[in-house]
Figure 1 (cartoon, protein in one colour):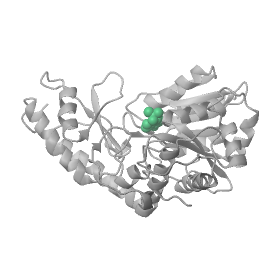
Figure 2: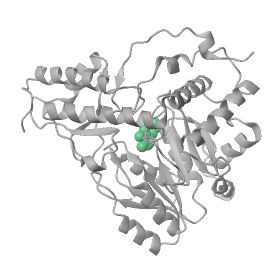
Figure 3: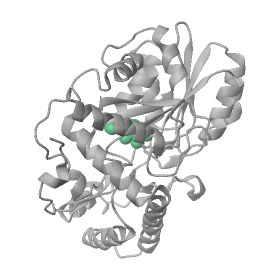
Figure 4: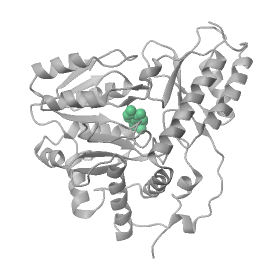
Length: 385
Ligand SMILES: *Cc1c(COP(=O)(O)O)cnc(C)c1O
Protein backbone atom coordinates (compact mmCIF):
# COMPACT_ATOMS: atom_id res chain seq x y z
CA UNK A 1 0.00 0.00 0.00
CA UNK A 2 1.30 3.44 -0.94
CA UNK A 3 1.64 5.75 2.01
CA UNK A 4 0.51 9.32 1.76
CA UNK A 5 0.77 11.24 5.00
CA UNK A 6 -1.86 13.78 4.09
CA UNK A 7 -4.43 11.08 3.35
CA UNK A 8 -3.96 9.49 6.72
CA UNK A 9 -3.44 12.36 9.12
CA UNK A 10 -5.97 14.97 10.08
CA UNK A 11 -4.22 18.32 9.81
CA UNK A 12 -5.18 20.33 12.85
CA UNK A 13 -3.73 23.81 13.29
CA UNK A 14 -0.87 23.99 15.76
CA UNK A 15 -0.06 27.18 17.69
CA UNK A 16 1.87 29.28 15.22
CA UNK A 17 5.12 30.70 16.53
CA UNK A 18 7.03 33.22 14.47
CA UNK A 19 10.68 32.27 14.53
CA UNK A 20 12.92 35.22 13.73
CA UNK A 21 16.00 33.25 14.80
CA UNK A 22 18.42 31.99 12.12
CA UNK A 23 16.73 28.58 11.76
CA UNK A 24 14.96 26.38 12.46
CA UNK A 25 12.29 28.44 10.73
CA UNK A 26 8.52 28.69 11.09
CA UNK A 27 6.98 25.68 9.34
CA UNK A 28 3.54 25.11 7.83
CA UNK A 29 1.08 22.78 9.56
CA UNK A 30 1.12 20.51 6.51
CA UNK A 31 4.90 20.08 6.91
CA UNK A 32 4.50 19.39 10.63
CA UNK A 33 1.85 16.74 10.00
CA UNK A 34 3.71 15.14 7.11
CA UNK A 35 5.80 13.49 9.82
CA UNK A 36 2.84 11.50 11.06
CA UNK A 37 2.96 8.40 8.89
CA UNK A 38 2.51 4.68 9.37
CA UNK A 39 5.76 3.11 10.53
CA UNK A 40 7.93 2.03 7.64
CA UNK A 41 11.30 0.39 7.37
CA UNK A 42 13.46 2.74 5.32
CA UNK A 43 14.88 -0.18 3.34
CA UNK A 44 11.45 -0.66 1.68
CA UNK A 45 11.05 0.30 -1.97
CA UNK A 46 8.42 2.92 -1.08
CA UNK A 47 10.89 4.83 1.02
CA UNK A 48 13.72 4.43 -1.49
CA UNK A 49 11.37 6.02 -4.03
CA UNK A 50 10.74 8.98 -1.74
CA UNK A 51 14.48 9.47 -1.24
CA UNK A 52 15.09 9.26 -4.98
CA UNK A 53 12.55 11.98 -5.75
CA UNK A 54 13.92 14.22 -3.01
CA UNK A 55 17.49 13.95 -4.30
CA UNK A 56 16.34 14.86 -7.80
CA UNK A 57 14.42 17.86 -6.46
CA UNK A 58 17.37 19.06 -4.38
CA UNK A 59 19.45 19.32 -7.57
CA UNK A 60 16.60 20.92 -9.50
CA UNK A 61 16.06 23.65 -6.89
CA UNK A 62 19.52 25.05 -7.70
CA UNK A 63 18.99 24.54 -11.44
CA UNK A 64 21.61 21.80 -11.58
CA UNK A 65 21.96 19.55 -14.62
CA UNK A 66 21.26 16.08 -13.22
CA UNK A 67 23.92 14.48 -15.40
CA UNK A 68 26.57 16.73 -13.85
CA UNK A 69 25.42 17.21 -10.24
CA UNK A 70 24.16 14.88 -7.56
CA UNK A 71 22.58 15.51 -4.17
CA UNK A 72 24.13 13.55 -1.31
CA UNK A 73 22.00 13.60 1.82
CA UNK A 74 23.08 13.06 5.43
CA UNK A 75 21.22 12.83 8.72
CA UNK A 76 22.14 15.82 10.83
CA UNK A 77 21.90 19.58 11.25
CA UNK A 78 23.62 21.93 8.81
CA UNK A 79 27.03 21.62 10.37
CA UNK A 80 27.21 17.96 9.35
CA UNK A 81 27.37 18.91 5.69
CA UNK A 82 30.08 21.51 6.35
CA UNK A 83 31.95 18.69 8.10
CA UNK A 84 31.39 16.29 5.17
CA UNK A 85 32.55 18.76 2.51
CA UNK A 86 35.61 19.92 4.43
CA UNK A 87 36.79 16.45 5.45
CA UNK A 88 36.08 14.69 2.14
CA UNK A 89 37.20 17.03 -0.64
CA UNK A 90 40.81 17.89 0.18
CA UNK A 91 43.30 15.58 -1.58
CA UNK A 92 46.35 14.20 0.22
CA UNK A 93 49.04 16.83 0.86
CA UNK A 94 46.77 19.61 -0.39
CA UNK A 95 45.18 22.52 1.43
CA UNK A 96 41.82 24.16 1.82
CA UNK A 97 41.54 27.94 1.81
CA UNK A 98 38.59 29.44 3.68
CA UNK A 99 37.34 32.92 2.87
CA UNK A 100 36.47 33.80 6.45
CA UNK A 101 34.29 36.79 7.25
CA UNK A 102 31.92 35.42 9.86
CA UNK A 103 30.94 32.73 12.31
CA UNK A 104 29.98 30.10 9.72
CA UNK A 105 33.16 30.39 7.66
CA UNK A 106 35.12 30.34 10.93
CA UNK A 107 33.37 27.04 11.65
CA UNK A 108 34.79 25.52 8.45
CA UNK A 109 38.28 26.61 9.54
CA UNK A 110 37.66 24.90 12.85
CA UNK A 111 36.48 21.71 11.14
CA UNK A 112 39.63 21.61 9.00
CA UNK A 113 41.61 22.10 12.17
CA UNK A 114 39.88 19.21 13.96
CA UNK A 115 40.77 16.87 11.08
CA UNK A 116 44.32 18.19 10.84
CA UNK A 117 43.70 19.35 7.27
CA UNK A 118 46.12 22.10 6.22
CA UNK A 119 44.01 25.25 6.03
CA UNK A 120 44.75 28.75 4.83
CA UNK A 121 42.46 30.90 6.92
CA UNK A 122 41.86 34.16 5.03
CA UNK A 123 40.35 36.20 7.80
CA UNK A 124 38.48 39.40 7.00
CA UNK A 125 36.41 41.79 9.08
CA UNK A 126 33.02 40.34 9.99
CA UNK A 127 31.15 43.52 9.08
CA UNK A 128 32.10 43.71 5.41
CA UNK A 129 32.93 41.80 2.24
CA UNK A 130 36.16 39.84 1.78
CA UNK A 131 38.99 41.45 -0.21
CA UNK A 132 39.15 39.33 -3.34
CA UNK A 133 42.59 40.65 -4.34
CA UNK A 134 43.95 38.97 -1.23
CA UNK A 135 42.27 35.71 -2.27
CA UNK A 136 43.65 35.98 -5.80
CA UNK A 137 47.17 36.63 -4.57
CA UNK A 138 46.96 33.80 -2.06
CA UNK A 139 45.84 31.26 -4.66
CA UNK A 140 48.44 32.41 -7.19
CA UNK A 141 51.22 32.04 -4.65
CA UNK A 142 50.20 28.75 -3.08
CA UNK A 143 49.64 25.98 -5.58
CA UNK A 144 49.01 23.47 -2.80
CA UNK A 145 45.57 24.93 -2.27
CA UNK A 146 43.06 22.60 -3.95
CA UNK A 147 39.79 23.74 -2.39
CA UNK A 148 38.37 27.20 -1.79
CA UNK A 149 35.50 27.38 0.70
CA UNK A 150 33.21 30.29 1.46
CA UNK A 151 29.81 31.05 2.94
CA UNK A 152 27.20 32.53 0.64
CA UNK A 153 25.24 34.27 3.36
CA UNK A 154 26.91 34.79 6.72
CA UNK A 155 23.81 34.24 8.81
CA UNK A 156 25.49 35.74 11.88
CA UNK A 157 25.60 39.20 10.32
CA UNK A 158 23.32 39.00 7.28
CA UNK A 159 26.13 39.68 4.80
CA UNK A 160 25.76 38.23 1.30
CA UNK A 161 29.15 37.27 -0.13
CA UNK A 162 30.04 37.56 -3.84
CA UNK A 163 30.30 33.83 -4.48
CA UNK A 164 30.30 34.10 -8.26
CA UNK A 165 33.47 36.22 -8.18
CA UNK A 166 35.10 34.03 -5.53
CA UNK A 167 34.29 30.94 -7.61
CA UNK A 168 35.81 32.50 -10.73
CA UNK A 169 39.07 33.19 -8.89
CA UNK A 170 39.05 29.66 -7.46
CA UNK A 171 38.55 28.10 -10.90
CA UNK A 172 41.15 30.36 -12.55
CA UNK A 173 43.60 28.88 -10.09
CA UNK A 174 42.60 25.25 -10.58
CA UNK A 175 40.70 24.94 -7.30
CA UNK A 176 37.25 23.53 -6.69
CA UNK A 177 34.78 25.85 -4.99
CA UNK A 178 32.74 24.70 -2.01
CA UNK A 179 30.04 27.02 -0.70
CA UNK A 180 27.91 26.92 2.40
CA UNK A 181 24.58 28.06 0.96
CA UNK A 182 22.64 26.78 3.96
CA UNK A 183 20.97 30.13 4.59
CA UNK A 184 20.24 30.95 0.95
CA UNK A 185 19.24 27.53 -0.45
CA UNK A 186 15.54 27.60 -1.43
CA UNK A 187 15.32 31.16 -0.14
CA UNK A 188 16.82 33.20 -2.95
CA UNK A 189 17.04 32.02 -6.56
CA UNK A 190 20.33 30.17 -6.92
CA UNK A 191 21.93 28.59 -9.97
CA UNK A 192 24.85 26.33 -9.10
CA UNK A 193 26.68 26.55 -12.43
CA UNK A 194 26.15 30.28 -12.96
CA UNK A 195 27.55 30.97 -9.50
CA UNK A 196 30.72 28.97 -10.32
CA UNK A 197 29.97 26.54 -7.50
CA UNK A 198 31.15 22.92 -7.45
CA UNK A 199 29.60 21.97 -4.11
CA UNK A 200 26.86 23.80 -2.28
CA UNK A 201 25.05 22.95 0.93
CA UNK A 202 21.52 22.92 2.23
CA UNK A 203 19.73 21.98 5.44
CA UNK A 204 16.06 21.10 5.82
CA UNK A 205 15.20 23.47 8.67
CA UNK A 206 16.34 26.62 6.88
CA UNK A 207 15.14 27.67 3.43
CA UNK A 208 12.77 24.80 2.86
CA UNK A 209 11.15 25.40 6.25
CA UNK A 210 11.11 21.70 7.09
CA UNK A 211 12.37 19.88 10.18
CA UNK A 212 15.94 19.76 11.48
CA UNK A 213 17.74 16.49 10.82
CA UNK A 214 18.51 16.27 7.09
CA UNK A 215 21.28 18.14 5.29
CA UNK A 216 22.82 17.72 1.87
CA UNK A 217 25.38 18.84 -0.60
CA UNK A 218 24.65 19.26 -4.30
CA UNK A 219 27.96 18.59 -5.96
CA UNK A 220 29.87 17.87 -9.13
CA UNK A 221 29.69 14.12 -9.77
CA UNK A 222 33.13 13.97 -11.35
CA UNK A 223 34.68 15.60 -8.28
CA UNK A 224 32.78 13.25 -5.97
CA UNK A 225 34.15 10.28 -7.94
CA UNK A 226 37.68 11.69 -7.65
CA UNK A 227 37.33 12.06 -3.90
CA UNK A 228 37.14 8.27 -3.65
CA UNK A 229 40.92 8.31 -3.54
CA UNK A 230 41.32 11.15 -1.04
CA UNK A 231 42.19 10.46 2.59
CA UNK A 232 39.26 8.99 4.51
CA UNK A 233 39.11 11.21 7.56
CA UNK A 234 35.67 10.29 8.87
CA UNK A 235 33.60 7.12 8.81
CA UNK A 236 30.07 8.46 9.22
CA UNK A 237 30.69 11.71 7.35
CA UNK A 238 32.55 10.57 4.24
CA UNK A 239 31.06 12.04 1.06
CA UNK A 240 32.08 9.32 -1.38
CA UNK A 241 30.90 6.51 0.88
CA UNK A 242 27.45 8.05 1.17
CA UNK A 243 27.26 8.90 -2.54
CA UNK A 244 28.28 5.41 -3.55
CA UNK A 245 25.69 3.85 -1.26
CA UNK A 246 23.00 6.10 -2.73
CA UNK A 247 24.02 5.17 -6.27
CA UNK A 248 24.05 1.45 -5.50
CA UNK A 249 21.11 1.16 -3.10
CA UNK A 250 19.14 4.38 -3.46
CA UNK A 251 19.36 5.31 0.18
CA UNK A 252 21.51 6.55 3.03
CA UNK A 253 24.17 4.19 4.25
CA UNK A 254 22.81 4.27 7.81
CA UNK A 255 19.31 4.71 9.21
CA UNK A 256 17.74 7.89 7.83
CA UNK A 257 15.49 10.10 9.97
CA UNK A 258 12.40 8.68 8.29
CA UNK A 259 9.72 11.08 9.55
CA UNK A 260 11.98 14.10 8.95
CA UNK A 261 12.40 12.97 5.36
CA UNK A 262 8.62 12.90 4.85
CA UNK A 263 8.40 16.44 6.22
CA UNK A 264 11.13 17.48 3.78
CA UNK A 265 9.22 15.95 0.90
CA UNK A 266 6.15 17.98 1.84
CA UNK A 267 8.24 21.16 2.20
CA UNK A 268 9.69 20.63 -1.28
CA UNK A 269 6.18 20.22 -2.65
CA UNK A 270 5.24 23.54 -1.06
CA UNK A 271 8.39 25.13 -2.49
CA UNK A 272 7.35 24.19 -6.03
CA UNK A 273 3.79 25.32 -5.38
CA UNK A 274 4.95 28.75 -4.25
CA UNK A 275 7.67 29.13 -6.89
CA UNK A 276 11.22 30.39 -6.36
CA UNK A 277 10.55 33.98 -7.46
CA UNK A 278 7.31 34.35 -5.51
CA UNK A 279 9.11 33.04 -2.43
CA UNK A 280 11.97 35.48 -2.85
CA UNK A 281 9.48 38.30 -3.26
CA UNK A 282 7.60 37.27 -0.10
CA UNK A 283 10.84 37.15 1.88
CA UNK A 284 12.02 40.47 0.48
CA UNK A 285 8.81 42.14 1.64
CA UNK A 286 9.47 40.66 5.10
CA UNK A 287 12.94 42.23 5.08
CA UNK A 288 11.52 45.57 4.00
CA UNK A 289 9.00 45.36 6.84
CA UNK A 290 11.87 44.71 9.28
CA UNK A 291 13.62 47.87 8.13
CA UNK A 292 10.40 49.88 8.34
CA UNK A 293 9.84 48.65 11.89
CA UNK A 294 13.40 49.42 12.97
CA UNK A 295 13.21 52.90 11.54
CA UNK A 296 9.93 53.62 13.32
CA UNK A 297 11.48 52.49 16.58
CA UNK A 298 14.76 54.34 16.09
CA UNK A 299 16.83 51.13 16.15
CA UNK A 300 19.95 50.86 13.98
CA UNK A 301 21.17 48.06 11.78
CA UNK A 302 24.83 47.10 11.67
CA UNK A 303 25.64 46.01 8.12
CA UNK A 304 25.47 48.27 5.06
CA UNK A 305 22.09 47.74 3.48
CA UNK A 306 23.55 47.14 0.02
CA UNK A 307 25.45 44.04 1.18
CA UNK A 308 22.61 42.62 3.26
CA UNK A 309 21.19 39.28 2.13
CA UNK A 310 17.62 40.49 2.74
CA UNK A 311 17.17 37.43 4.94
CA UNK A 312 18.78 38.55 8.20
CA UNK A 313 19.11 41.95 9.83
CA UNK A 314 21.65 42.41 12.61
CA UNK A 315 20.35 45.11 14.91
CA UNK A 316 22.53 47.16 17.26
CA UNK A 317 21.76 46.61 20.91
CA UNK A 318 21.54 49.73 23.06
CA UNK A 319 24.22 50.94 25.48
CA UNK A 320 21.42 52.35 27.68
CA UNK A 321 21.25 50.59 31.09
CA UNK A 322 17.47 50.27 30.63
CA UNK A 323 18.12 47.92 27.70
CA UNK A 324 18.36 44.20 28.31
CA UNK A 325 18.25 41.71 25.44
CA UNK A 326 16.85 38.90 27.55
CA UNK A 327 13.98 41.04 28.85
CA UNK A 328 13.19 41.93 25.26
CA UNK A 329 13.54 38.31 24.18
CA UNK A 330 11.31 36.96 26.94
CA UNK A 331 8.60 39.54 26.36
CA UNK A 332 8.48 38.65 22.65
CA UNK A 333 8.83 34.90 23.23
CA UNK A 334 5.82 34.83 25.55
CA UNK A 335 3.82 36.38 22.73
CA UNK A 336 4.96 33.91 20.08
CA UNK A 337 7.94 35.72 18.52
CA UNK A 338 11.48 34.41 18.87
CA UNK A 339 14.45 36.72 18.34
CA UNK A 340 18.10 35.76 18.59
CA UNK A 341 21.37 37.22 19.88
CA UNK A 342 23.90 38.37 17.29
CA UNK A 343 27.03 36.51 16.31
CA UNK A 344 29.49 39.33 15.84
CA UNK A 345 32.67 39.62 17.75
CA UNK A 346 32.95 42.61 20.04
CA UNK A 347 29.56 44.14 19.27
CA UNK A 348 26.26 43.75 21.10
CA UNK A 349 23.64 42.90 18.47
CA UNK A 350 20.51 40.87 18.02
CA UNK A 351 19.12 39.36 14.86
CA UNK A 352 15.83 39.41 13.04
CA UNK A 353 15.76 36.64 10.43
CA UNK A 354 13.04 36.18 7.82
CA UNK A 355 13.67 32.61 6.68
CA UNK A 356 10.50 30.63 7.19
CA UNK A 357 6.81 30.42 6.29
CA UNK A 358 6.08 33.98 7.33
CA UNK A 359 4.82 37.14 5.65
CA UNK A 360 5.37 40.85 6.15
CA UNK A 361 2.19 40.87 8.28
CA UNK A 362 3.92 38.64 10.83
CA UNK A 363 6.80 41.11 10.91
CA UNK A 364 4.36 43.98 11.48
CA UNK A 365 2.75 42.01 14.31
CA UNK A 366 6.19 41.43 15.77
CA UNK A 367 6.94 45.15 15.84
CA UNK A 368 3.70 45.86 17.72
CA UNK A 369 5.02 43.51 20.43
CA UNK A 370 8.62 44.79 20.25
CA UNK A 371 7.42 48.36 20.73
CA UNK A 372 5.50 47.33 23.84
CA UNK A 373 8.59 45.56 25.14
CA UNK A 374 10.73 48.68 24.75
CA UNK A 375 8.07 50.83 26.41
CA UNK A 376 7.99 48.34 29.29
CA UNK A 377 11.77 48.66 29.64
CA UNK A 378 11.18 52.40 30.09
CA UNK A 379 11.94 53.77 26.62
CA UNK A 380 9.96 56.38 24.75
CA UNK A 381 9.70 55.73 21.02
CA UNK A 382 11.31 56.46 18.71
CA UNK A 383 14.53 55.89 20.56
CA UNK A 384 16.98 58.74 20.08
CA UNK A 385 20.68 57.99 20.26
C1 LIG B 1 22.41 27.38 10.18
C2 LIG B 1 23.65 27.41 9.42
C3 LIG B 1 24.55 26.34 9.47
C4 LIG B 1 24.33 25.08 10.25
O1 LIG B 1 24.06 25.21 11.58
P1 LIG B 1 23.38 24.02 12.40
O2 LIG B 1 23.19 24.62 13.74
O3 LIG B 1 24.29 22.88 12.41
O4 LIG B 1 22.10 23.68 11.70
C5 LIG B 1 25.69 26.42 8.69
N1 LIG B 1 25.93 27.49 7.92
C6 LIG B 1 25.09 28.53 7.84
C7 LIG B 1 25.41 29.67 6.94
C8 LIG B 1 23.92 28.53 8.59
O5 LIG B 1 23.08 29.57 8.50
